[in-house]
Length: 204
Figure 1 (cartoon, rainbow, N blue to C red):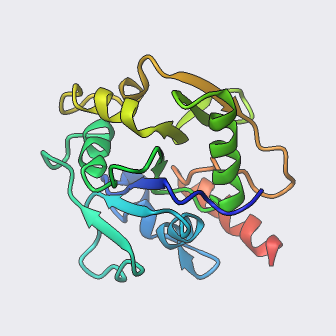
Figure 2: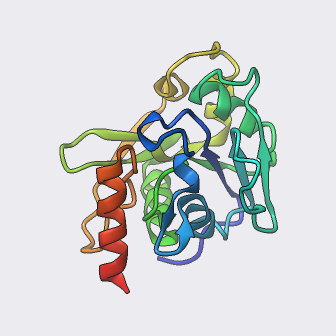
């Protein structure tokens, strides 16, 4: 698998209360000496646009060159509205856009390329998402046709669940067969973070 296509964009959703981490934003937690957000943004480095949506701590490190941050409208209105806001900063000529949770420490260029290739093979109107080991679709680790996503996002109300963004889109599911940690793995709990740090240490 090669580099990401030039007409590909990525929206990363950050913020939230993260009560299980004493209020610390999950995307700013460190894995192998790098924040999870920094790791995810690096995986998307070849994208035409990288849009971070949500509030970050005042002391967070600056985003890398080329990445931009915006607050969802209205603030605190949930992931679907966050994607709607992020799409406003995605160039019109981007045909595919990844919608990604901000707490994916093992996202990689190879994983994104696999999603893009799977969606492309199914047709320009199809999307692709990873499934976890239990067969559950990971809606915030997928790639979608930008035009269809824009149309759906225009209809979502504040508080709407993310899955409404994908209504009417043919969805291909992808499993991660590589021995490396799965790109869909998110850090929802302290135990998840411990697991991520263990895996990252083993990779060194």
